Length: 479
Image 1 (cartoon, helix red, strand yellow):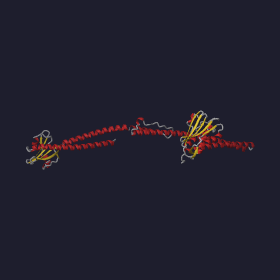
Image 2 (cartoon, helix red, strand yellow):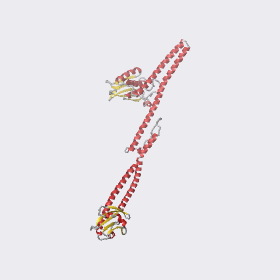
Image 3 (cartoon, one colour):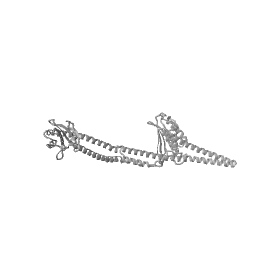
Image 4 (cartoon, helix red, strand yellow):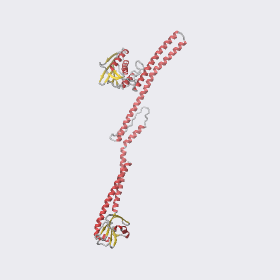
């Protein structure tokens, strides 16, 4: 604001000075013309009068008219006063004596001690035997210029004051949205976002957001930023909750086999010690049998832990984009092989395969895609009763290879349908390996499908459950 006012003040001062200078030239030009006109009217009177005082008294001349005559009878001078013509003193005549020595048509400015500044011209008399000097006061010109400069100064000061008030109001109104943006940013900055469930509800008010102004665009951009930060914080909180649940589920899954291994190992050690204390054959046989059973249980639990750890490692590597070996894959052949493997494992289920005559090829990892189909078939076998019918179909739709696994079982509980592909999610909440499992099968299937840039979905209702896998069918460069 100071810079604007300073610039406007400079412009106004320059305009005032320029106007005064031009007007001063015009007024001096007009005054010079008046001197010439006055001299013309006095020229005829100088011949018939003996003194300057007599010449001025013989007519009506403007107030302040100055006349000095240099004739054979001497030098005389007079000035028209407010009430009468007054003769000049010797001191006054001494100030303009040099101007009477020769004819000089150029206007001159003289400063008379008792009269002030005058614009004078020297003219010859009609007969050429005398010189006379005519002048008019500069007070009218200086007074006009002074009045103009005073008016310009007052108008400039008033205009600058008004301009300052208007600019202050305009800036205050114009920056109101920016103050709202700053206040919103300050409130958001005071929030603690490093832990817990954080929700940013602060926004720039809608009436302060206008896409047609730069400040309004800043407010809109801040609101957009806050929306994205709020969404990111919500996603972070969900990820933290999933991670805590993941760690808890993984810990529980590992604790059960570890506890079993510990218990059976203690049982084996106890049986061995008892056998050492009692050397009877019966005690020894019982110890050997107990130890053998314990080792079998320990081996089973070790295999369970190994499978869990391998599944977790596979998920971690898939999240990092590893574990895939691309090549040309015939999805039809993989589906046929997977159904052939599932029949012996589920002899009490009815298995059907529906594939086209032509192979459905794609670029992918054959072993991992086989794992996806195997997990879906195992899921259908585990969660459907005996006698259920499972159908596996493969089709080529547009630019996608589509695999569907359908069963007519009881369907999926709606309460877990939205989390079915999450890690450690279970349709059966039990920890039984035969029914509940670890809950990693479908999450591994989704991770593998995502790594192939595909999608996996499920539609379920009682008697009709279908898992659908869609993969890009056009072979791609493995690189």
